[in-house]
Image (cartoon, rainbow, N blue to C red; front, side):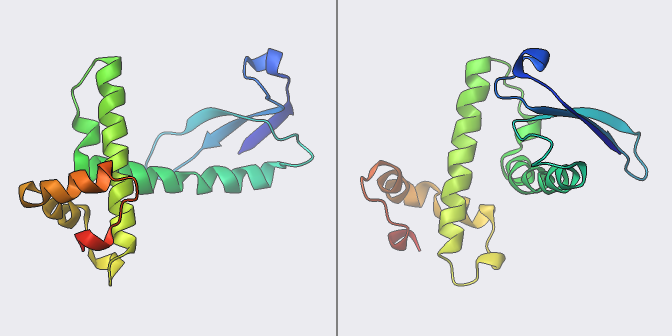
Length: 145
């Protein structure tokens, strides 16, 4: 269930805000969760049903990138507590994931390669190639295949 209302940036403390919503998420086997949503799209452009579809589609990020970061890099188990340390580790994990996705797209059967395959390729025997990839002005994944 979603309830929407027109708002101003001053009302909610978010620049460009034009609309806010309260969404009740109900999932079988889980406790109901109520969340607040804010957008710069006015109600005329973003009706409640479309907002629900977009919100549900946004979970692709959670089940895609976040799941990959958590499984491949143990992101949720990280015990770093320093803000800077978390930021630096997060950036390196996302860079590593981006490099993996580029490498994966160049493979003959991309659905059959994993982050572990990429990490093995970048292991100690391939450190020079990995550094060349990262530091080169015109990096190429062809040399890494």
